[in-house]
Amino acid sequence: MKRVAYNRLSMLPSACVLSLMATVAWSQTLTWLGTPIGNTSLATAVSNDGMIIAGRAGTVLAGSLSADSLLWNRRTNTVQQLSTDGGTVWMMTPDGNKIAANENLSSPPYRAFIWTPEGKQYLPGYSAAAFCINRSGTLVGGGWNYGSGNRPILWDANTQQIIFAESSLGGEMWGVSDDGSKLLLYTRSLRAKVWYRSSNTLVTLLPYQNDPYTLGFKLTPDGKVVVGTSGSIYNIWTGVGNNYRAAMWREDNSWQVEPLANLGGQRGIAYDIKGNTIVGFVSTPSGENRAVRWRLSTATTQVEDLNQTYGALLSSGSRLRIAFGASYNERFIVGVGYNAATGREEAFLLDTRVCNRADVDGNGCIDDADLLQVLFAFGATDIDFWREDINCDGVVDDADLLQVLFGFGSGC
Image (cartoon, rainbow, N blue to C red; front, top):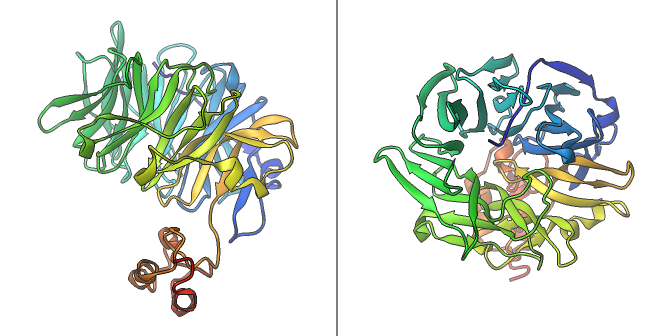
């Protein structure tokens, strides 16, 4: 079982963390989140406004039980410890108001819970662990200990009641579609599977060539794409070992395995997919892990090293090692890297927003597509329309439309 977290709530002073945060609100920024517990930290999930970040801290690189789940809350300027005695957290809703997490990992019974701004809501089930929550925040999935092994379990997030607890199929649940019709499982056959609930049909996500295992980390809200890894699975937090590769499986491609583009090394994992953005890590030929981003439409042929794209934000010697998560609106990326200023492996928050860029869709050409995007979003003040708000003033209006018109045809 990919074990998860432990108990009480603890509020930690965060001035040391927040002092490292960039003060420029509307340009690309890289924020190192510090190590509130122990000597390492990592971030796994982030809200659409970049104000709620979930992850782990402790001696993260020593093993799954040596760190606890954390919440960096930039709205309240605090860091909150969500577990003790071992804990993990993987997913949150787009607004950051519901987070699926775990505690008490070093000894059973493990406990699954949902964090909300009002506190922790424990989920029923003996030795249960929560690994996923759907986009709308209505369903939580995970694993529970039944007899000699783990089994998938699904909860109603609003009532905290069990919808079903599978007793015959070994494994855990790592993804649930927004309507609950499709579930992403990791079974004792060491294969990821997609479960169509309406027809009770299981589709096995086969590995690449002769790889021994497949592990799916995320299922898209529509249930049509899974990202993860194919190969010899090692510690999912540290990116060690060899012979495993980032991969995806798509319903539109009959769930065939599709290895993602790499940087020439021998390992990689795709940890998250949000919209057209896939994030994770791959290794270089020399064995160094690099945090990367793929675009869904070109993921099998192109990979983007975040250390190159955002190199201007990195101080000398600092590196972004693994990208664990992205916000639903694709603006923020979180993970772990080496912070040369502190000499530690630390969680990072990357804001990818660029102001005054009229190429809204980022295809290199300011054209009709960009114009239509701004027109359809006209009047919006929602953070989901951060691309269309070209001048970063908080509203999509005439000023943004004029930037597209003045730049029309550039790069085409």
